[in-house]
Length: 150
Image (cartoon, rainbow, N blue to C red; front, side, top):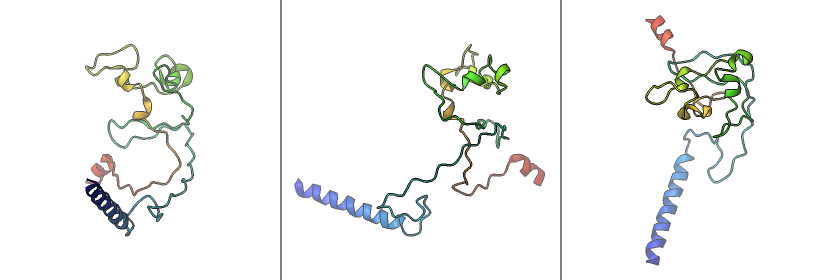
């Protein structure tokens, strides 16, 4: 039994060594040339865009991005800081856009008095924007541009 475990361990070690060699042979990674065996330093934190400018969406049903800082926002079972500005009752004084009516519907499309539990955790879909260069090249073409090109 011990001999069998040693052979399995050796086999896994050889597989790990082979995969390390394969990854270091010019494959595109986000490690930026840092060897697998060493720990790279943490990348520099990018600044959050805090200009409150509403962005154009790239495709239908795209969740809007968040154009402001949300670092200390509490979103838990007991509190949702986003709703202090984006709730139906608060948009008049905050001038923030109201959350979509779809957030007030359950899975059977029945309208609820409060935000649906499945839409309560905003950061599942909505992301804060930062001033960072893209990690990969983006070749996205908007459908309007495709139609204009025909």
